[in-house]
Amino acid sequence: MLPLLTDYEKTHIAERQPLPDRYLGLSDADMDRRIAAAKAALGSRLVILGHHYQRDEVIKFADFTGDSYRLAQQIARRPRAEFIVFCGVHFMAESADVLCAPHQQVILPDLAAGCSMADMADIEQLEICWDDLHRAGPGGPRGTASPAVIPVTYINSSAAIKAFCGANGGVVCTSSNAEATLRWAWQRGQQILFLPDQHLGRNTAFRMGVPLDEMVVWDPDEIGGGVDPDARARARIVLWKGHCSVHTRFTVRQIESLRAQHPGIRVIVHPEVPLDVVQAADDSGSTEYIIKTVTNSPAGSVWAVGTEIHLVSRLARQVAPERTVLSLDQFGCLCSTMFRVSPNHLLWTLDGLLDGVVHNRITVPDARKYWTKIALDRMLTIS
Image 1 (tube, rainbow, N blue to C red):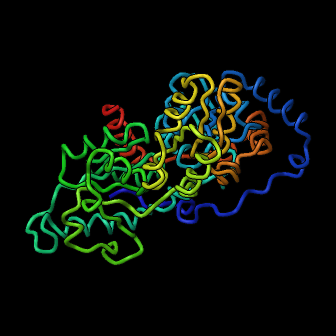
Image 2 (image 1 turned 135 degrees about the vertical axis):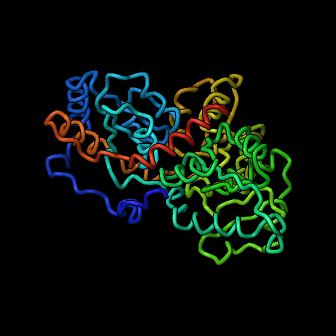
Image 3 (image 1 turned 90 degrees about the horizontal axis):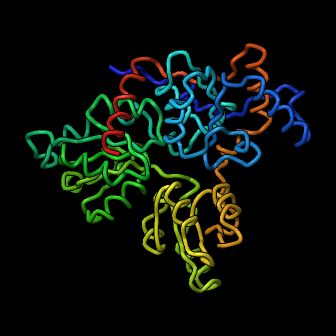
């Protein structure tokens, strides 16, 4: 039996932590000077990881930047580091703790930096769903045997969900290897349970040729997932009712508006957006894919990018003046939980380390860590 959720995971740390007054009201110049000095003093004992969606004031101090799993992998490149400060969100720090060496400690500068998508998949609800799927059998309620259901979770999920998948023959995926992961899972079972992001699952399966009538959405707040039993039995993939609050802001109307304003514009979106947005765009892919595609495009190209605004703005600066990069959402599309990691929190964290105090260490229980690593290692074999 896997361990239950911790109190933290059940409450999701809804409120931000108060910082000591001396960390408030600092000028940008003073903040930068003090962070740089603390980082230099810690030297090889420290590695700072910065997610693509992090604000510029923080990510400029990162030793490595990237998406969540790529960052967790960078830990192996700094084996001497005692402290891993992850400027991202909670599930990312958990993955880092699973993959780091025993002597390393993972720190999240602000415990309120969570992920609304990850919070939409609760382990108790998943266990109920799992039991329901196996009771139904391959012919729905009339079935006499359970179909082979393979659980697949997007990396944007808690360690509890990853561990469940690992313990039940499943795997973790990223947005870049989702198609290969689904193929891997269908080779092992008749049906996939994909969580927590229904859009990534739907977009990937549809691109692979799975018709929409062979997909169902499981609502964990409804009895039986709110799914017709016969439809559930026919489904090749059961999609958990979860989503990214950032990427579901993008719409077909936004694409149409920018195409009218900029004839010849290319539109590229993250696969966490709804299906109709992917179909209206010219291309879709992970954050790393978006960066590579836009960066390698011909000079003079004009792009509308459907993902978090900090990545879009940074990409626009990197490729300028040879290319024009616009946000698909003209009002900006901010990941508010990622934004909670401030330079103030980073400075407080580093000062604590200099004083021998570790603030906000993230630890995954050993039993959960074991199965989470199994699920992550399986993902690596697919990649």
